[in-house]
Length: 467
Picture 1 (cartoon, helix red, strand yellow):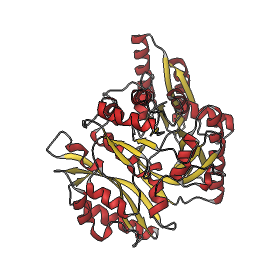
Picture 2: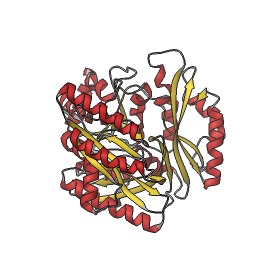
Picture 3: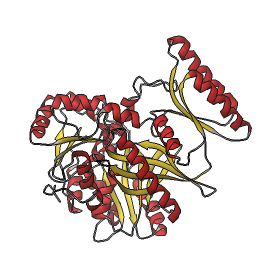
């Protein structure tokens, strides 16, 4: 399918996922989008923010830098996507065989292993000229999320951004903002404290120590941490004392006593959830979906849907989405939003843990979900990390999966929703390297889904050691 003729819909729910996102962000159902999969945008939001003291350069891994290709399946024919290198031709043919119209591909001038796509694009004169032409033709830049780096890219390319300013995006993505919004709305919230100074952190740690003494666990999170980064978990006082010493030493060394963290009491979690909604420029809110989130050590691993929720829980999730969406609109935000939530073991629901006012991993599954997958299927979207001895062509993956490779006429199987991450480690190296397969496992029920996952795992082991 391609971009439809312009019209003003009665409401966002009358449009498919990408069409609704297009209208919400541009006010027009026919505006061409230039998609940018800058997955590590939180890294830019965190620059200059005094979170937990940490080591490391913060640069994305080679695999994460090639997650730019996830944006390929979000766009329609008539849109464009900026990528660091050309997709595998076999993979493109496979996507077309699913009946998907694909966006035009705009390549950066270079592809360096650990350089984010935004930085590559900003340093690509040839690409910037092409993007400027798209801008003159009415296209708008739709990144994963907006930071100062994407604004600089848009300015260099003379390509207007379809999302709010970076300062707005950064503010509403802070975990401090999210907790305070939940409290203001009266949404059930994990016990915790927001800390914007060393003194506030010391007070929060004193109260958290009481939780530890009662046998509880607390987490200290950077305001702009993501996917397991910037989190310290404490189940004994010594760990909190260590964190206090670290932040005090930094404050004494720099003279800067600011801090941007939250301290939360760890809930007794049964199920992680992620739900998605879209906020339009006029402030209207469309609830898109809710999925179970698969995590390991706080790091995102995938999704399972449909989410196994009670009607009461689903109602609370959808009501919270409407409240949060309208509040975000009042604070100047429009565009895609994902919210993390949990169902606790006692049956209660905490419907707002974190706000991710940007595209989410689930955003990049939505168009495939709508166009290619039976509505009653059980779908597990997950990553498989493998140490590979050498590059893998998509044709080889198709051969190894065999009858397990998803075909619409079969209605079940493994659907690769990205491929560039498989060979990301071989951009500037020839030896063994980490690769990642992103697959949507589609089956008619949970039992068949579990069997499919086991068989796919066994076949992927032919490529190398599974991590």
